[in-house]
Length: 276
Image (cartoon, rainbow, N blue to C red; front, top):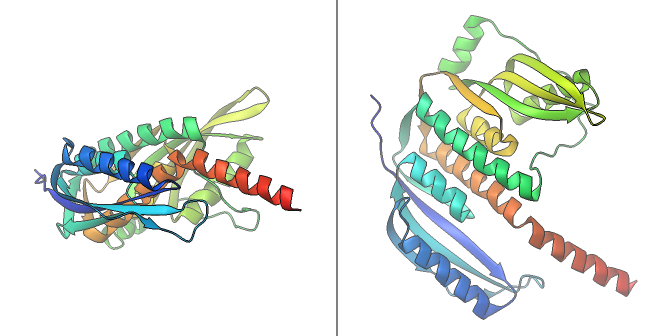
């Protein structure tokens, strides 16, 4: 049985706003919530003084630094809740996580991110994929073994919903998308039907990628299902976990702050039109 190690992290939570007192109150409230947090053990919380920025639209900024300790599930839930600007993993230097346990964590992330995307819009955006060649599909058992053992790739089944003009176009797009995300594609299957003038599909792909790529892909696409096939014990370094958690926090931050950014852009556009 894999030991359930405690993970030590530091969250750097950034606050920005145009009113100093309001930002100070918001930071103080977040710090209070952290000190009373039940998801993880809170070792320390410190709040920096609010400072004035050169950025006109977000005049003030402040930072909370919080040292936390907990299991993987607790740390991930805290990341989803607080969306820190940076997550620093203090230890351990390496983790071994049972694949079934990791799948449950991934499922929880997918559900949470899916709910956010329903409210604020999607995260996946690519430049034109026209010039990207179709990647290779399918590998020998020997190649798969090398990817998993030597390159520390994870083999997993990834099922997402997709819309497009037709089944073939959706397949090409997803193959190229998985490729530029850093995945090797062993198998792909598509089942679809036409709905309201668009072609709706379920795309099932057997992919291989490093842990960080799988983690990012899961958060960005919020799949219908993800199933880790190999290895049964996933080896994760502190650096890999740190990068994955920081990326996850960034995705959450991007979505929940999208309405604010939209207002700022609209305000700038309006000002620009008046100045013309």
